[in-house]
Image (cartoon, rainbow over all chains, first blue to last red; front, side, top):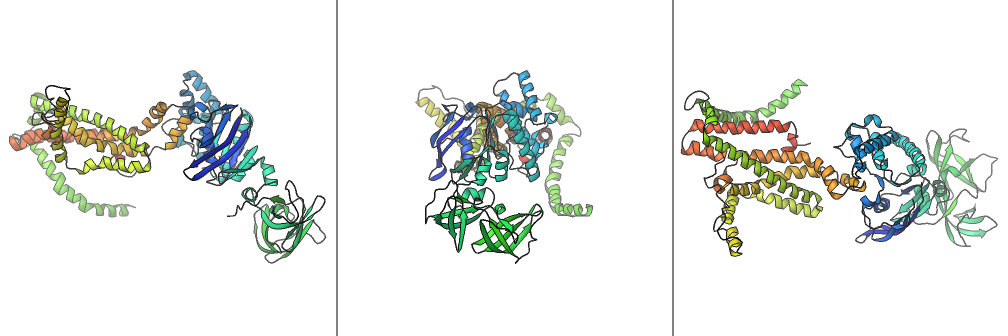
Length: 360
Length: 278
């Protein structure tokens, strides 16, 4: 099963919801479309499912153009936002629905329903009505219903957004285990970056109807291509500067009065060009008296908070306020407002990103 | 807790007294005539079993109310379904179109039907003019005319409870069903229709009960030849001055309505029917 999107676009009047999306999803992949609300992620999913007709572009399934096929012909499983369980049917009837419309015999249906309910550990609740179940259980019924006819592709529209945080984490793990066990292709839509990172093999980050970057969660976090990606996935400090030195392996980037040593990474830079550095808070170290680093900076703590595993500190420096994360265990100092500290980071810690003005 | 409840009841007392003194008590008094005139006992009620005119009136009323209910439900369901599926803008116009007839006097509408349906009416003239028929059809002053007028009157009452039930149905359910491979017809028959049933039942009760006691429309469109219960009562009391006989029928009507309500309230949420909160 390979799903390909070629220049898929959707506009409503003058409003462009999706702008030429290209994607290739291979067999067994768990892909997440991640973006803020209005970024077009749900529209893309809806076009894949067949509920929304693209303005232009094509969708191919195993090389076959399915762009104009109605949803019921595509044979994809889908978990809807809010689950969309049929309130007048029992759990078993809900799960049997896709089989019933396919004209499957009763005996066969019952066997498949039992299998699907076992898969999500809900066999005991087969005769209950959806409203008699908890949110997490309803979510699993929706999952069983989407998987019962063994679709090659499962589409998930914000499957966990209605659940509280703890339950969400639990179901994330279940979903991931399920994906591994049945080896089917999952396409998930979410605005929750943690969910996207923990579930997916591959994440497509969307903003304003465009796919900004596609890659494994780790690659996206470590090598964000643009300011938006760096900002949306986790937190980051942004340092605008100018390239002043093109050395061997490292650049000299002038940020305010500070000359920063920086590895160019994949970015193409030229002397005198403006660049934007993205520096993750956890990559800034608080230096002891004897410590050194490629980049060293005097700073003063302006605010801090204790988060259990670590401290989140905002410190005023010569290049503006910097946010840093410091592990609480064996912390080199105990934060206090106004405390003077030395900060350091290595030349490969920051990433040069394109400034797509995500802040606006 | 009890004291607080008592306070609320005190607030209801004026309305309760007003209703009891000026509405319920007089009705009971009138109905009690059916046991006292012309002589004490169940004499009037025995005539349900023996009097042909009573039996004919009851069966005519039941039949007309039943047919009216079924037709109003079918037409109303189609309208309510269209309104539910329409765009927000179109929906407002639809609802206005459904409500407008409610604001026009039932008398005006009944006479309007007479002018349309009578022998020299618009419909007969048009059909004769087109050569479809030679002789004018008997469209009014019979059961057919009554049913036409009553269905027309009842459709809005059928639409409103069904519309309310249909609008409570999450549209995502239909999308989901389509996505799971169901055809449009399957989506309707297995998802939409079962979920709209409470509204259909509510509409059925409402139209049936209203139809049972209908007076003006049957009186005008029936032309005095087809009598329904309400007109029959009026003839007994006002023309024949047989109070006991007339109030007996009124009692039968009220009991029938209460029984119908009682039976349906076990199935349907009555608060939905009468517009209360869910």
